[in-house]
Length: 112
Length: 112
Image (cartoon, rainbow over all chains, first blue to last red; front, side, top):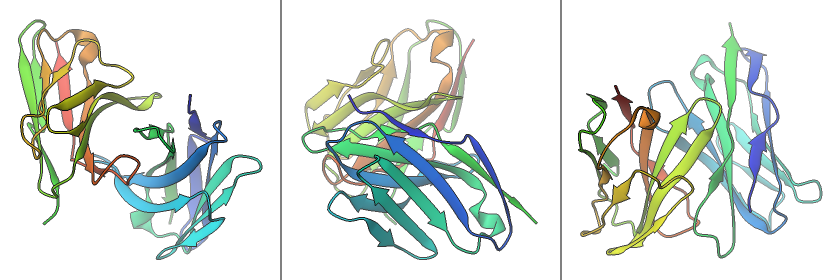
């Protein structure tokens, strides 16, 4: 089955610096990945997604990189702001599997 | 506004007293799902529904029931709650399987 996890449970970054949050997955058939942001007391919020036919996708201040060779996914947040403080987790799915599998999350803390 | 609405937001109950957590989405999504979130374990799927009258077990279905009589509603039923069902619950929906999920704000359930 699918296994999706994150490398670090916590990450502290200076305000204004770039953040990189990593995620690994086990199923080489995985072809769809999503990054979610969960602020305290709220439900997970969609940030960005990527399909396996792409290596990189950019959004507003965020970039997702997919390395299928080593089954690794990363979320880069540019110029981190206090509002970026949250738990970030990745989710993955493979074609024909009707559910996403979620990682356990990285708590991002912004240092003023 | 497109959203997934869960009620109640907080619920404290006692062992054995039947309860229902409601979930409604206004996006005409076919796919709906329930998750529980526990510290260190991430999001685990309880049940999901591909469409009206079509439901199936997720990873942790024991002690839960669901129904999908209408497209917009997907209630979660605990017939006889136990303390190990104390958790944070999220309802989510998406256009179809393997699409990005939209989450509700969560229901914090405590079973005494």
